[in-house]
Structure formats: structure tokens, C-alpha cells
Length: 262
Image 1 (tube, rainbow, N blue to C red):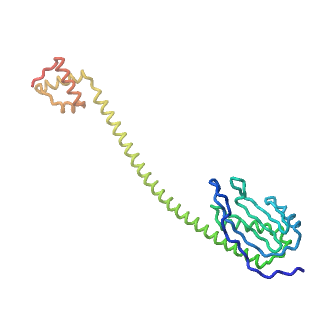
Image 2: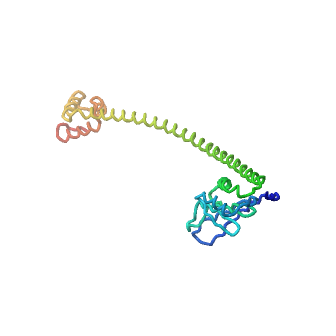
Image 3: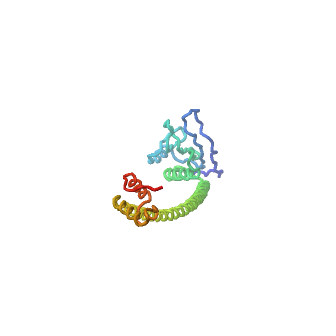
């Protein structure tokens, strides 16, 4: 039976910017993160590559003493891998290195990578003697990240809900005020229309007496009132406009039907 390796601490790769060329049109550089799992390889590379070949989403690179499994999730404008992860199967460890691109939560990204890593381990686990204590520690660390991520996500969602709920209540009050204003304007519009209809009817009534009839009425008025006429009173009696009475009086004087005495 193979001898177990001495317990070692988990090594976590320090996050650092990816080297990039100074090009004006280059996309923002991602960060690199990762971790190492102490493990002793007990089978040939050929068996590892055979097991990994079942995953169509990864690309394999076989070197002298290790296999690299590249999983490209997105590429930049030059078709170079941008969002990706690479798992290195070395004689004494399994290492995963992955990128975190701008705009993606680091915790969310680490959760996605752990899921991919565990999927690979199910395929090649029998090819390594893995330090389970170290493995569980890694899983535990990531479970803590998942819990914190879920909690922070819930807090963010609740905060957004609180803001949206406040805005909704504000909009509801505005809608109620607008509805009240609309009802008032509608009522005033109906009243104005009724008043307008009344005035139109009144105007038609005032215009219903012909000029000839009014001339006769003027002459009758003058005969009854000692050849004097109060235009305001006359207009009120016969429901006509004062301006119309004045116009007819002037016409009758001009035509010689009446004589103006100053």
C-alpha cells in the first residue's frame, strides 16, 4: 500500500493581474485565483486523460509529468481565453487556476469553479490518493463563501425590495392624486360644457328675433315712452344684445325712419 503523504497546509494562489499587452482596444484584464490540493498520483497519465476525455467541454494538454485540463467559458475579442479555469494534475498535487473577470462576483465565481472541480474529481479521484482532511477543509471554506454569498445576496435583494416598495407606495400616492385631479378636471369640464351649451342656446334665442321685428318693437317702444328709449332696458325686455339695438337704431336714423334729437 502506498505511503500517505505528511499533512500540509492548503495553499491558496494569491490573486494578481494577468499579464497583458498595452493595447488601446484590449478588454480589462481579469484576476487570477486558485488553490492546491495535496494528492499523490498513483496511476499513469494515460488513465487520467482517458477519464477526462469524457468531458467534452475541456481541452487537454499532456506534458512530461502532468496533464492540464482547460475549460474555456468565454474569449476576448482576439479569441484568447478570458473567463476560464485550468486544472493541473501533477504527481504530488492537483491545482486549479481560474480567472475572475470584471463585473462578476468573486464569491459567485469561486462557487462555479468549485462545482467544476468537484465534477472533475468524481472522474479521476481513483487515480490519486487525496488527503481527505485537506479536501474537506477546502470544501468547508467554499461552503462558508457560499453561505456568505447567499446571505449578502438576500440582503441586497431585500434592500432593493425595500427601495422599490417605497417607490411603489410613492407612485401609488401620485396616481391617487392624479386620479383626484382628473376627476375634478372632468367635473369642471362637464360644468363648462353645460354652461357653454346654455350660452349657445341663449345666443340663438337672442338672434331668433328678426331685425324687422325689432325695428317695429323699437317704434312701439318710442311711442309708449315719449320718443325715448332706454337701450339696456329694451334689450333686457326682448332678450337681445344691447349692441344689436344700438346698431338697429343707427340704421333706422340713417334710413330716415327715425330722427335723432340731441
